[in-house]
Length: 570
Image (cartoon, rainbow, N blue to C red; front, side, top):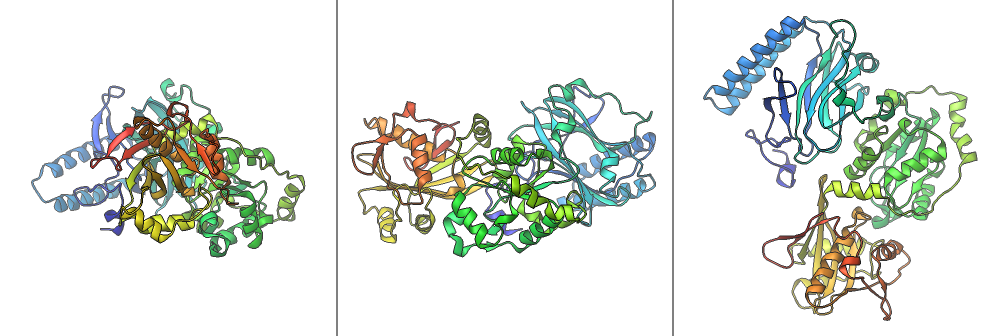
C-alpha cells in the first residue's frame, strides 16, 4: 500500500485495497437511449479515469459480436464462482489475455475513434482522450471532447491520431474528465476505434451537438506557438512571497526547455499570481527575464492572464500550452479555455520531445522573440475578478474548516506566521510564546486555525486569526497565498460577523498595519467593505448582509461545538 493511502483524504479502499476511483466501481447497465446496447455506468471520483492497454485491431462485425457474448458469459461465470477475490482476479486476467490473442488477427485500418455517452450531468462536461504508446516515446495524441447532457456521439478522425501515434503497436488509451463532476453519472456505450460500414460516418445524433461549438473552436492547434509558464514550484522550486528570492531554486529542466524552444522560435510568457516587481526582479536575477513576452504577473484568475497574453501577442489561444503545478489553476484555465493545452509541471522533462513543439531551427525562428519584444507593451493594471471566475469558485466547492488552536497545530501556525507577508493583516509575525499562550488558554484572546479544501484536494492549514471574544476584534490575521482571491477570507469574516451579531454586536473590527509587503491584505479589506473606525490601525466591517461574497465558501465550524456543524453552504 503506498504511503499516500494513509494520509490522503480521497482514499477509499476497494476490495483489493487499491484506491477507489469511481463511486460504485464500473456498472454494466442498459439505457433508454440505447436499450439493446449494454453500457458502462461510472461516477468519477478524484483521479478517476477509464484506461485500457493493448493493440487496436479491427474485427469483422460478426466476430466482434461473438467475442462480446463470450465476454459476458465468462465475466458472469467468474463473478458467480464462490472463490477468493484474488483467484477471480487471476481468472479475469487470463481471459483478457485470451481475448487479446483472438483480436491479434485483425487490421489497424480505422476511420475514427468513437465515443458514445449518455450524460446525466446537468451541464456540459469536458473529457480528455489520450492515446499513447505503452512504452513512452514522448509522442502522444490528446483531444478534449465536450459532452452535453443526454445522448452524445463524438468522433475523432483516426488519421489525426495516426499522425502522432503508431496505431499498429501496443497502445494505452485513457478517457478522463478534466474536472471530476461530483455525483454526476455517465453511461458509455462505445469507446473504441471503428471503421464505417459504407465508408462514411453516420450522422451525429442532434442531441450530441446541440448548443455546442464547432470542434475547430474547442480543440488545440496542431502546433504550439507560445508556452505559458507558472512560476512558483514550476519554473522554480519554492514560493517567492513566502520563501524569498534567496531560497528559490531554478528547475533545470524548465530552463533547458525554455532556451531550446526559444531557439526553435516558440515564444514564452508567464501567468503567475505574484507581485509584479518582485517576480520580475527574480527573473532578472536568474537571467531569464528577457525570454518572456507580455508576462502577466498579478492577483487575477490565470484564464484572464492568458486572454491578455493572446491579445498582446496577437496569437490565438489554441496555439498556447499552459504549465502549472496546481490542479486548481489548471482546471480554472481549462474551464475558461478548452482550446488551450494544459499540462502539469510533471511533463516539463518531456517538452522537447513533444511533436506539437517540434519546429525547425532557422534564423527567423531565432529572431522571433526579438521581433515581438520591439512591439511589446506593458499592461500591469490590476482588475477585479469577473463574474465568470466567481461561478468557477462556486463549482470548486471550497470548504473552510475553523478550529481552535491546539498543541497539535502550534508548529504549523508559527511557521505560517513567519512565512506569510502578503496577507498578514497586522503586518507582524507572532512569537512562539504568543502562539503557545493561545493554545494553553493563557491569553484573553482566542486563536482560530483555518484549514481549507476543495474538490481538487486538501490545502491543509492556511490561516490563523487571534480574536478577542468579548469585542470581536481581530488583533492578528494571516493567510497563505495558496488560497488568495478564493474568498476564503470573506467566508471567515462572515462567520465571525454572524457570531458577533448573535452576541449583540453589529460589526467586527480588525487591526491593519501597512508593512510594505501586505498591500493585498488592504485590497481584500477594501473588497469586503471595511472602513476606518476612528481608531489608529483599526478597520470596521459592514453588517453581515453587506459583506460581499461571504457565502461562496462552505464553513465547517469545529471551534464552537464538539461536533462540527456546517453553518454556511454555497
